[in-house]
Amino acid sequence: MNDQRRAPIFEALQQFKTMRIVPFDVPGHKRGKGNKELLNFLGEKCLTVDVNSMRPLDNLCHPISVIRDAEILAAEAFGAASAFFMVNGTTSAVQAMLLSVLKKDDKIILPRNVHRSVINALVLCGAIPIYINPQTDERLGISLGMKLSDVKQAIIANPSAKAVFVNNPTYYGICSDICEIVKLAHNNNMLVLADEAHGTHFYFGENMPVSALCAGADMASVSMHKSGGSLTQSSFLVCAASVNSDYVRQVINLTQTTSGSYLLLSSLDISRRNLALNGKEIFKKVSELTEYAREEINGIGDYYAYSREIINKDSVFDFDTIKLSVNTLNIGLAGIEVYDILRDEYDIQIEFGDLGNILAYVSVGDMDYKNIERLIGALTEIKRLYKNNKNGLLKHEYITPEVILSPQQAFYGKKQSVPLTDSVGEISVEFVMCYPPGIPILAPGERITRDIIEYIRYAKEKGCSLTGTEDMNIERINIWKGGY
Image (cartoon, rainbow, N blue to C red):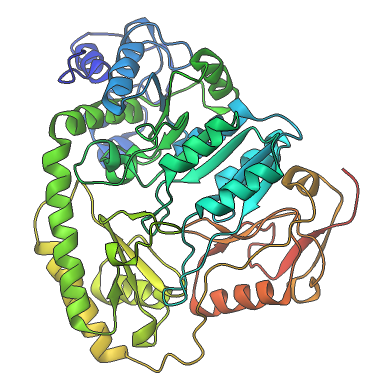
C-alpha cells in the first residue's frame, strides 16, 4: 500500500522552486520575466512552475521518477493496474483507448450518443462502428443507456468485434448495466472501454453507481477536471491488468504533447491526493447539496429535476444523483433558453442547455448552500417571468442515424460543399453537433435527412452553439462525392 498523502509531482515542483536554477530552456517567458502582462495576470506562483521536462521533474513521455511515482499512486487510488496522466484532455484519453485496441476495419460496438472524441478516433484508425441506438425517454427527450438485450444482439451479430464501448455515465447521469455488459463482452473475447468523463466521483464517493474498473472494464478515461477538481484539460486514463500498459503508453505518445504542462500534471497529482484522502466526505456533501437543490427545484413546479425514480434496471440501470439535470419543457422554454437567461440576467453559468434540459454541475468546489440557493431563486423567477406554452418545442435530442460509410472513409473521401438545405439524401463527411455536450447530431458517413436538417435549424433558432463543419455559420455542409 502506497502513501496516498504523497503528491510526487507537486513535491518535486516545490523543491524545484527553492533551487536557484538559471533557465536556458523553454518556455521562453523564463518564469514570467519575458511577459510581464502574463505574469501580472496569472501570478508568479503559477509561472515559476510553468516549466519544461528536466531530470528532477521527470518526463511525461517516458517517466522513470516523480511522474512514475505519481502514476503508481493514481493507479492505486482508482483501483487500476496502471494509470496515465493525460494533459490533452479526456479527448486524448478516449482516443488512446480506442487506438490501443482497434486497427483499420476492426469493429467496435458502441452507443451512438458518444462524445465526438470517440468518432474522431474511428476517423483516425479506420475502425468500423457498430452502433446501438439508445432508447429515448419520451418525457425528458434524452438518450438513455444501452439495453443489455441490444448489446447481446450486437455481439451475436458481430462476433469479430474487438471491444464494447460504454458511457459511464452519460452527460445526464444515465448508467447502463456495465457489470453485465462486461460479462457479455469478456465471454465473447471482447474488451470493454468506458468513457467516465463524468464519473470521477464513482471511484471515491459512497453509494455511487459502480465505476468501470470495479465492474471489470479493461480501460476507462476519467475527466478529473470535471468533478474531481483538477485544472481544465487534465485527465486520467486508467487500465486493468488485462491491458498491455507499455503498449498503451506508446499509443498515448502518438498524439499527446511532448511538452506536458506541469501546471496540469501537478493539479492531477494534488487532486488525486485530495480525493483519495477526503473523497468520501467531499462527495457526501456534494450529494446532499444536489439532493436539496433537486427537491427545491421540483417544488417550484413545471421544472423536473429527475433522479433515481427513472431507473428501470435496463436502459436506465442506475442514475448518478450528483448530476443536477433539469427538464424545462413544461415551462415552455428550451433548456438552451434557460441556460442563456441564467447567464445573461442572473450571472449564473451552468454547464449546458440542450433543447429540453439543463445541467448544473455540482462538484468538489461546492461546499455550501449559498450558490445553490441563488440558482433555485433564479429558476423560480424565470418560471414566473418567462413561462410559456410548450407547443412547438422539439421533444427529442436524439435522431437515429443511417450509417452508410465508415467515419474514416467518409472523412477522407472526395467532398463537395453544398447548402445545408440542399443536402437531403446525401452522405455527410463532417460533424454537426451542439457543444456542449459534444454528441454529434450528424457524423461522417451518415445520411443527411430532413429530420436532421430540421433539428439543426431548430437548434440554431434556439441559440445552441453548433460546431463541426468547415462552414462556421453551419449554413453549408460537405457531402461525400466518392473516393477514399
